[in-house]
Image (cartoon, rainbow, N blue to C red; front, side, top):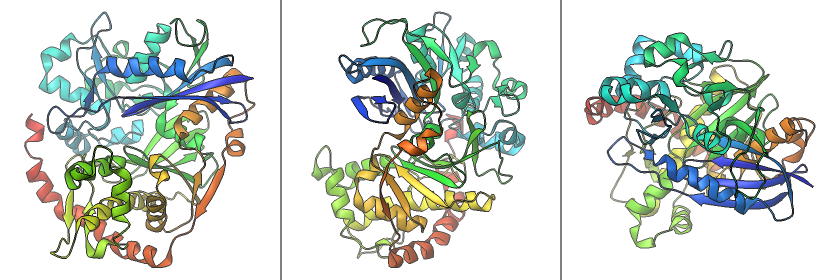
Length: 492
């Protein structure tokens, strides 16, 4: 039996899962690592720790006696690290959640709005383009010493195969790649202050390199399919590749995406457009705050519940009614992305009264995540994208309460896959096509099993629909306060 190992290099852990061509799982491993916040607005990692997590997970996932035809990779998008001539890191790994470049992003949104249309990447602090401008302006001496800029998957592939290469999907999330021609955009490079030679070679996600590393559970020479970004691959892993079928994911962050056949740009600049494979582009929006909100609630609201209070927190949230009795939370703890694409906002509770208790605070936080995804859905429809079906995945799907909450907030049925490793499965499916293990990516629709579909509860859905316009207006109403509270960030 030929197996393909899908490796998903996520924000807080790497998952490696060995799949057969029929979608069955024959090995699985996961290695966690911290997301560090050394200063407000910074969200970084030690790149060596992440690379070692990948190297540790791979041999654990490869079953003894199973033939591994290849390994395919997914990775969290928008990461950036600066390297010296020998490939040694000169900076930490800046993740998508790092918002230090918020001032540069806001300025570029005003001065160079056409970059969004050229690259498909919103002008936001998550973007490596904006991060590069921050380094050029705030740390010019360090910026001048850097000989190569790369993302986390590029570091892993260089370690495993000895080549600097980036797939078109991750490249299209840098803000530096032109949608037309899928090559580094000259204007974006000039603004960033880098050259194409300082970046990796752009290649199709189906390109395979040869493994040169020993001791990883597979022989040297095993094909390494470079894969794509975790967002587009989550669609593939959910079978959400047909017109009108959206994938919704809530992990550390969250997103809602559709696959379209050609690049589409939202004139209001609320949505991204990222490449996957020829004829497949992901259009949608990501939010910064997903499972991270639940983690925050455990630390800030319920430290007495222990080190892993998620189950107890969800039980608490279930004690409060839909709408949290008039309490709304804007869950912008890590600022926010879609549909506003601004690093300015912070979290806020609105409507807090003496009658509210801890269960209301926790539920309102989870409802805020779902309402933000409902805003993304509304933006997609407003931009002319038809959404007729939603499939969901992510760690949140283990909670019946949160699943129903999302369904009610979106106001339409949501199907949940039997497995929660959508991006790893998507990477494996891409690898299967590249290596000839499976006939076509289109088989993803057949292999993905939706084991339950939830219908909106009419009463709860009505509450969320009533609150959604207010939820949206609060962002605009509080923007002046956000600017004051975040005003010093651009000067750091």
